Length: 113
Image (tube, rainbow, N blue to C red; front, side, top):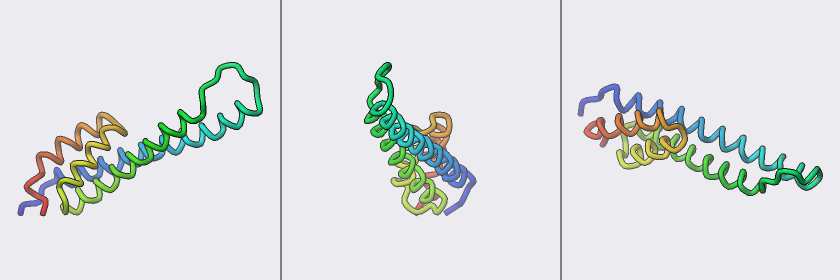
């Protein structure tokens, strides 16, 4: 089994994209908490329910974690299906990096156990 740079780069990009998605989700959840506090205590002008921030943020956190796990599997070259799933979820976190990770993971299929 020949090891090339493709799966290593795909794993690193997966982890970067997943961490970005995780951090964006965390910020959205915090914004939802703060927004919920101020909409209850403050003026009632423009009202966006804080639940929207919580849902979108939670989904982004979950997608980011799956992308990071897939990146770890890509770096270890262990389970190709999980590495590919991680790269697909990385696409939802960060489009340009996600496209690159999907392509590189697909091209490096023969490197996995």
